[in-house]
Image 1: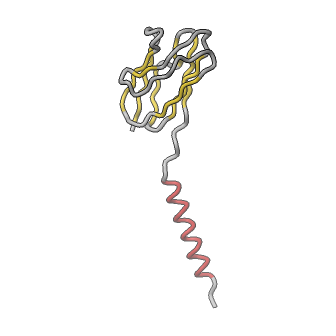
Image 2: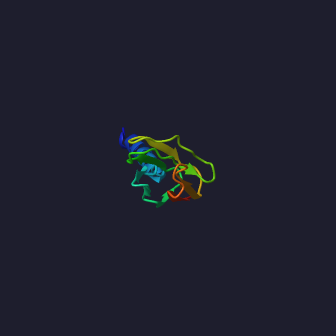
Image 3: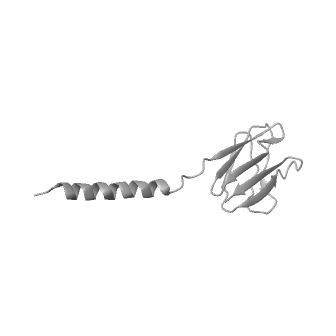
Length: 111
């Protein structure tokens, strides 16, 4: 009897599965934006669709994160608080702090 054929067939199936899994895209890396000294840092970023962005307040006073297109809005973030959102569609999102409107940022979301 030839037992090599079933082993070769199994190896072929395993290889096909591995190749198929490799074709799947990896999830985007999360991004952190710091709020410090009345600025968002970095103030401008470019990320792929599906990226999770977290803003963390390092200032001694509250701040907010509000998208001008109303796609997200945080509560007031005290020192050490964070706000997280996932960017689900391509485009440009402008955002600002509603308590300090001179604080602005921009995220470009690519397909």
